[in-house]
Image (cartoon, rainbow, N blue to C red; front, side, top):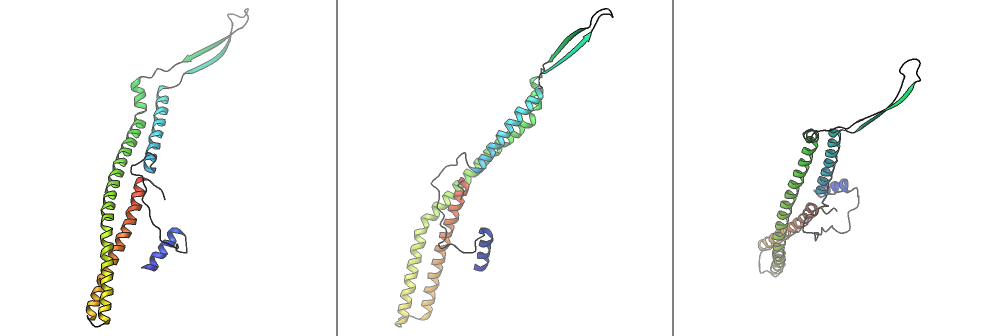
Length: 210
């Protein structure tokens, strides 16, 4: 499994040499979601695009004033000189409010969808943040206990080895003490790994990029 894990790590990072020390995830001091959160920033940009689309749709529905200029040459009869005249026509559209609203309905619907998506994302992120924060707090309260149990079991294993060396106990007791020491050490290590995972998850939820 170690070989497979190292191969996966190399594919993911592109590195062929492991770091000298394991990476330690540090929980950010930030406790609240900010508006510059990547997902929330995306939703805000979608709302801004929708606003622009609404303005374009309303402008198209209202129409634009039109001015046309023409030159006309005419005369009354063949004995009269030609008269040149310039004609200007102006058309100003008067679209009703209902027509304008209908023209921008799709754009307004898209804006509403973006606003709802932002609210839902905010609620989901907040719920996830509180859940991870609670689990992390509970875990960190338990870590000193698993560490103490690991140390006690390791000490008892050493004492069992000493007792076996002077003939005060048998090999069975030594093996049982060794198993307890290994189990408690493994449990504490798993707790530490879980702590790292929760810290990383907390940072990702709150929007802190690595």
